[in-house]
Length: 193
Image (cartoon, rainbow, N blue to C red; front, side, top):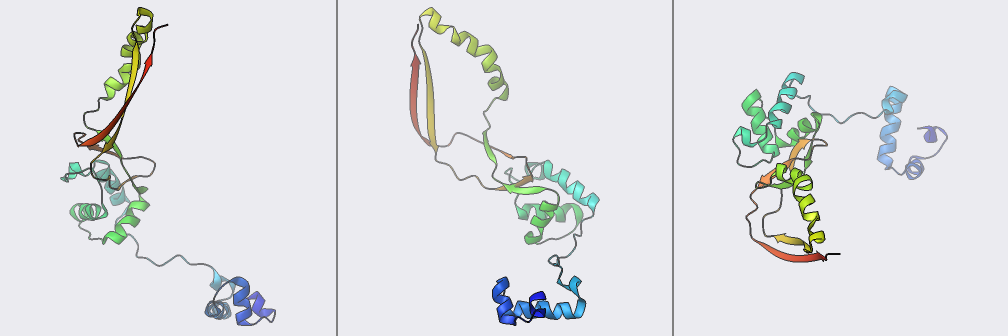
């Protein structure tokens, strides 16, 4: 608007500010009607959330229980599943395009879960450095050879889908690790000294 007041033409101002001529005309007209405040940016219009803050808090807690607790066969939250959960618990119907806004408002984000084998034993993993490794470490002194073996596998299973979870908290996807795979194996031996 200031450039127009300085005598520049509409097309010239449009080139200077890298906008269309119609935008310059719209800004000029808005300025004439409402002054400088009419040029302030406005948030995009959207309907306010029909869930109360208390209901949003309850939704957050319901989501933390996981999809399996709500009768689904997998641990993945989809927008449709969340919409169904809202309808079931609060009696409100939302289109999935609005559900992601609700999830963002309660600090959920769409994430790829970290696969975790159902057979995994966290206790055995935690105990290994303190219980098993000390006795293995003594093997070279007794004339035995230690061999470290590692396997790389190419799993022949479906891709991991995305799900919704609290921002900063990577969800875990428990799955059976009995699927077919292609394996490559290598070994490094430590000779006794």
